Length: 460
Image (tube, rainbow, N blue to C red; front, side, top):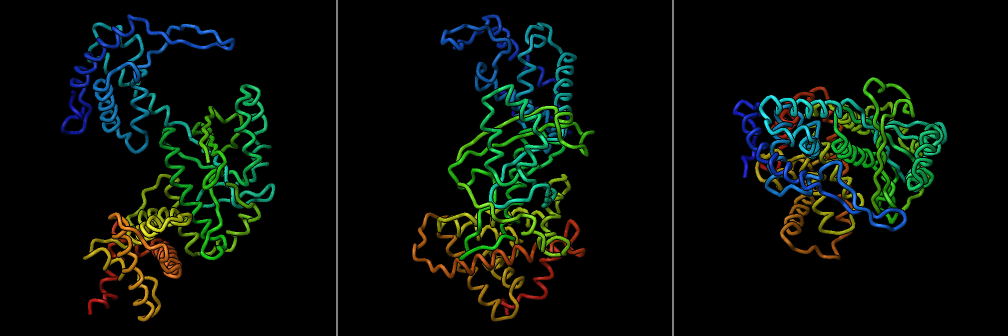
């Protein structure tokens, strides 16, 4: 087995070590190619046809040890070129496999250092080319609606009426359908959803852009659900078509050049398009998204401050430690919104508070109970009540994560109080995170010191 890293001590790519191991793999690939691997294909008339492979499926043909070596080379290459944040290891691995399956590599019996440098340069150019396109993820949404012609932005995410989207991209969608009738369900989904969200991701490969889009939309949907009136503690659903339901989730991805970033997305600017479909209720669409969030727009409150954090993440700006805590807490509260199982709900509420208040100052349950009470409590009596509730939450959490069961008759008023505590803490901390005093790398440390100095009343 090869070394797990192909980096020198100073972080440069180790060409000599990579050359040595790739030459070993080259021999195996050449041998495989000489046997002219084939695949059996069933044509439209049901007759089997044996076809010679044009490209070698190395991910299937090579053994585990060889693929591990190639994976380690790909990972080290990404680190040496500082691609880890922008490009997934899977992308580099697959592109490297493609280069290794090319005749220029496996038929070169004198493959040397210069040849390796050419191969790596080709790999780097492929990675840079991938980063040169903006990925516009198209997400079909249910749970609210917009009037025709309206465009609504939340945290840099653009929401439009699906009929407007279909009209704006009619030629593109018609061309796709005419090219492949199998795409009909993908096009019809725009008539089933309530909204279309567009998420632009720059400087990322396709896999990473999809992952970031999921992160972003999770927070955006949570933010919007926090604005939609709830009933009996239950939040109205707002999210991707298919979530919590029995319908299919369809996802679309447009690729456009960086220089076309400010242009209208149409068949002239779209370089490529990809589709995905996974399976899973529908929701009412009688909630007007624009009217729902309008009271928050132009007001310096928790909504706009969370929007700022989402916008910075979308635009690939570094979040402060304080903002990262809001980002994480927003995820866990979003998860709790739809949770029905007691153990999981308790864990998600506790994790939300932990993301906001865990500063490693003493025992976690004690510290988080105190911090939560200080931040949202209006007087000593209310703070003591909040402190007691959060301590009980952590006791239940400990029981849940260690395999214990929570009684089904757990007081529903307790869960509702915990929900209100979590949402109050999240919204208050979101507001504080954008205060000028805390806008620094050590902003959260300043917040902790303020709490410790002013409010350690439980230690008295």
